[in-house]
Length: 201
Image (cartoon, rainbow, N blue to C red):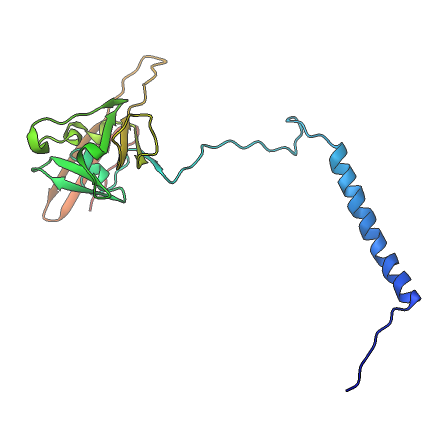
């Protein structure tokens, strides 16, 4: 078998060093430039970005946003449109929300920071039956027992319905109205507020 040997000639070594020398010089110049420059907030090249921290354990939504063809009759009727929720029906319009198979004392329902308690034995009157979703501005679901802000016992999670405090800067009239009617698979819904919405299916 024939062996091939390569040997470095002095000319090839000098040529290789001359080619790579400018690259090393550029890297050093760029490094020194970054050390000496100081950026300030007034500098147009500085971009300041602020955003809320997004957590996979928290879901924030607006209960005023329609999620189904018929408006939610109570809190659990709206919550069942969020993935992971289901409902135990206790009558025509009353339901008990179930999150990941847990309900009752394992799921805390809060309205404006205070806990909603049901009435009657065997949860015939679930706390969610006293919640009208469209009268609230914000719904926050915190999954699991990770937060201790609202006390112990929330192994499924905490549902917080909140209203934003209205500000009345000048005199005026404000209100919301809703009308729903259906017949023979036809649905008409008229919603009045900031914008008039009339969907017909």
